[in-house]
Image 1: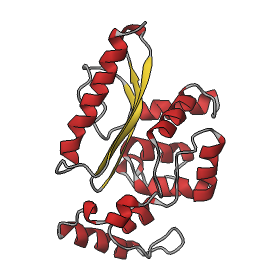
Image 2 (image 1 turned 90 degrees about the horizontal axis):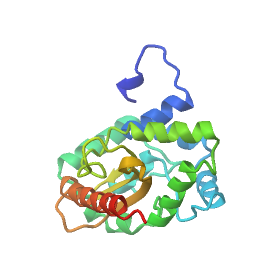
Image 3 (image 1 turned 180 degrees about the vertical axis):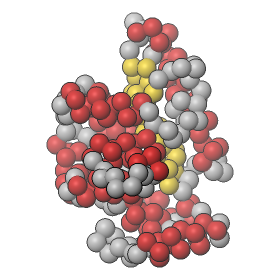
Image 4 (image 1 turned 30 degrees about the vertical axis):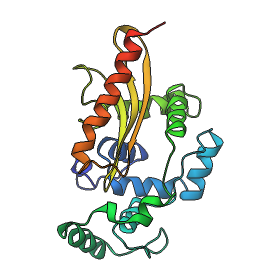
Length: 226
C-alpha cells in the first residue's frame, strides 16, 4: 500500500482506495476494491449491464501477475502467501523474465478489454449515465491527477493539456486510456491506446507511440471542429 495514506491507524475508505488505484496503480488497493465490488462475475456482469460488454475482469492483480510469471496454479481462490509471491517476483525479474515468452498468457482472453468497450465506458462515466453526478465527478477528478504514464497519452501534448487517464502495464503490454481536454473550449476527446506483442524492445520504447497517437488525435479534433 502506498505511503500516500500511510499514517498510523488510518482506515481506508472506498474513496481512499480509488485514489490509490487510479492515481498510482496500487495493486493492493485494486484487489481490495475487486473484493468489495463482488468479484469477477459481478464486475464483468456490470460491464455488460452498462453497455461495455467487451470488458472482462477475471482475476485479482495478485493472480494476474502470478500467472504472467508462469504460476498457472494461482487463481483468485488459490492464493499464494505474500513472501512466496515476493520471492517469485524478485527471482523471475532478476533472471530477466520476459512476459513475451509466456505465449499462453498473452493469448488468454481473461482480463481484456476491446478499445470500443473501454471508450464506451469512459463516455458513459463522463456523461454521468451510469453513476451519480457526484461519483462520476469524483472518478474523473482522480483520473486527472493520475501520476503514472507521463510519457504516454500526455507525452507529446501541448504543455498544460489536461488528461483524465489510467495506464495499464504488464510485461510488454503497454496501455493508456483517457479523456483529453481540447483547447479553447473545443471539447474533449476519448483516446484508448493498447500496445501488445510489439516488436519494440520494451515499455519505454512503446510510450512515444502512444504519445504520438494522442497528439495526432488532439490536433485533428482541435483544427477540425466542423
